[in-house]
Image (cartoon, rainbow, N blue to C red; front, side):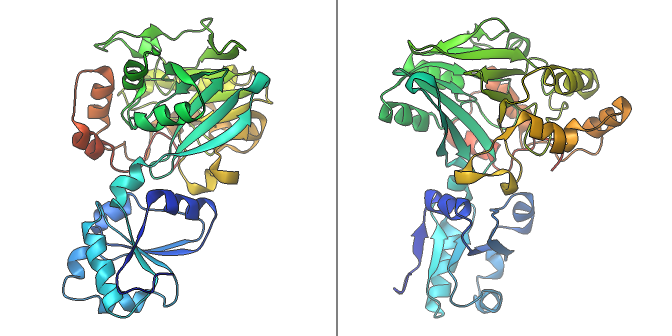
Length: 381
């Protein structure tokens, strides 16, 4: 408990642990109303209110009326400064146990929590990296001192340091498709580590860099014990979308299939062209796979999709029973569902696609601004 006459600091890592442990927390978000409505911190026991910073410059009395006494209070803003000021004012008003979020929503958006999914054969392991503030998921397969990273996020230092801690050298980085909601770190990580960067060629028609073609039949092995990553062509979200079967047990679906929804086909402006591919992938290709496979998607949309320790995963058979996107029997109804009345498109998605093609080279701060906000790769919110 913070009893000193100053506000404490909560890090993105600490906040992640609070969310994953389903602990109770009261949040005062002082960003403007539009930013708050677009994207906020969520959790099973998170209570959150929004009072814009400019409404608190003349005093925090009105805020105090809405903040329960005795509970831990976390004040949040975009980059930290405003929340620190407001938190200090609340402390001066006599409240204890008051904190502000270090780095604000900027740091929250970028934090990655590594979660072990499972051991693999012959001492291998599969890890999921949860970008809890944005709903992005990356994966690392480790075996016999080698590693492969799937759907790498731009915070490449996290993957490098994690592999180093596990005594592994990154040999491969793979993107399931050309991403539109976040900037891929796959090529950058490959350049930094000497790894091979793989990308589906049907998504790479406009890229400006060299890559290895990720196609069916070109299995990738990790380590001498040969953990196999098997590409499965699965178009629909993009024309090149490719899933992976790892160690014959796990299905990495990219942005084609999520736990509570399915991928949208419109982010390249070709929804009507790709809707048939999406249905065929979901209703035929995935149906033909072993229903015992464990689905590991590239995104989640709601905290309800976070399971034990933050894992985002489900058996394929369960998704065919419970996922609404897999239970639309009429083809015309499916077509309308995935092309009409969709959620807003991701922020700056056109610029992000151009960056992932190598056509734009934004600096670090520009990349942060491009990625601010939630992912919106799913048909259903």
